[in-house]
Image (tube, rainbow, N blue to C red):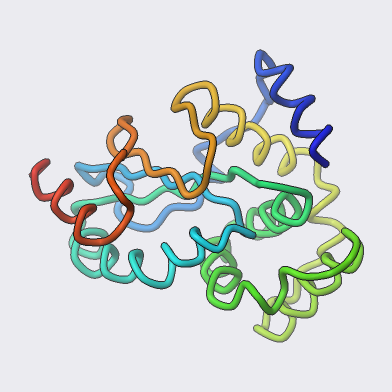
Length: 191
């Protein structure tokens, strides 16, 4: 899979034909004053930590109050993350819920000695959590695949993303240590 992502980086000039507005996973008011973009990999433990320890406070104080819109962007760090990202995009009306459930107990599904085993763990985990998704259909959907890859390419080109999570606030990279205290202080200065 490393060769695959290397190929993508070598061809950064590629533009995938995807309508990003219809498929973006968003939490909050689409017209909020502040837009936060979170580049994440679904297998990244730091991203899971963000969802467990920072996102709930951010949601309560800034997203639910209409101040912030949070856009989740894909930056898969391997084949398992790539397939999970495609699955999270597969049912648009449930995408945010799928993303949240995948981060809530990441250790339960991020395992396996092959991509097929990993896909089976992913499917079992989602079914256990009442998501009946056709995994095979999701991971072979070319439009979704292009969308996920486009997120990664755009993150690299536009914001020099090279790790996850990377937070972008109103098109500027958040370069402080990622904890709620720092994030809150930064956002309050923007109000």
